[in-house]
Length: 441
Ligand SMILES: *Cc1c(COP(=O)(O)O)cnc(C)c1O
Image (tube, rainbow, N blue to C red; front, side, top):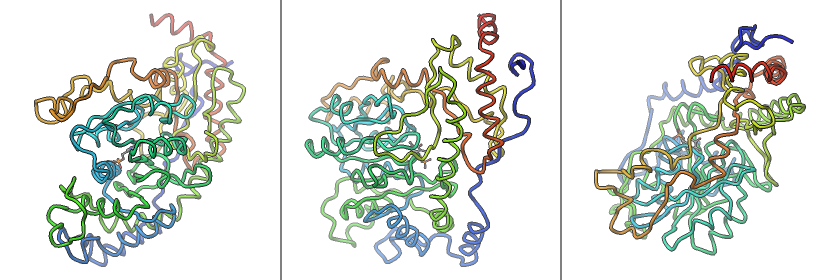
């Protein structure tokens, strides 16, 4: 049995993993054509034909809407912008509560704060790590206005019961699809299962334009509000006319550039093939890890097609006899980083982000200004808890899961064999690792 790299042995892997590089000659051509045209953005922040952006932006939106079977697609410059615009379009304001998952990127919850509303964190379903109708129901109050459901790690929440609950209580449901483009639920693409769906095109996502995002909806009124918030609503309303109300019509500049839109159009075509490769790679990894009894493979929810933004493994520390963090440390020592992300070390992690309610902003209740708004807003009569222990399933998941990204194309079968070999090598050396752990104190 060979010695663990952590204990001075030779690592399984001796070279970097390949970069996830989705930009190819087609995207270079698309970007160059925009540069040659001289029109890098055509948006005008006044009521004019160009209020809706230039030719690439408008074509990208039409193609995105078709690909995701949405009535409308509104491009934005990030998913963060998209979440903020969506919460604004939902009419959320002071005194309202927005129910959100604590196991997500921070912007999913910050979007409520931007509109002076209070994020209320509901627990996750331990099988899918997403909110469920039951966990949302447990947090409903007369102040609940909207729900941000995050399709975390690449699969959909169980949306039918969530939408039934939302209909019963008049709630707007925003899907955060940043980690799940092209994922489907009962044959339907995510993004139009709720009232609005928000996608990310940032550098780390399945398809990316550097920075960027898209909001999808089937509701024409919401689409109009999204377009207004994206582009200086308050400056446009009087001339535009026809808008029902002034609620949340403070506009921002969330506009996507023409180069990003052109790259996005090209990558939209490549998305399904990139995702098929991820799925095949995950299947190979799971087959390779099948014999390791203290690891559990992710549960794919009924009716879900998972797109694996990350691959999440359950780790049973009692069974292994070694702490999760020790196991991950030994695993990382056997592996190497990915090209273009060398500084991050091997793309293997212990847990995901800390449950959001444990961030200082919620613990200390300082949102904007110094007065404690929105938590102490005079319009807010509720009492929200951010106490440790609030969402036990999230806290348990965070303490026990292992995540990795070593399924991203163009990883090869030989690369995957190294990943699997590294897991087995650590699993075969647990008693040595246990001694090492003990010696660390
Ligand atoms: C990446 C991400 C976002 C934010 O995306 P940006 O485009 O970087 O603003 C939001 N939510 C989730 C779940 C994400 O993973």
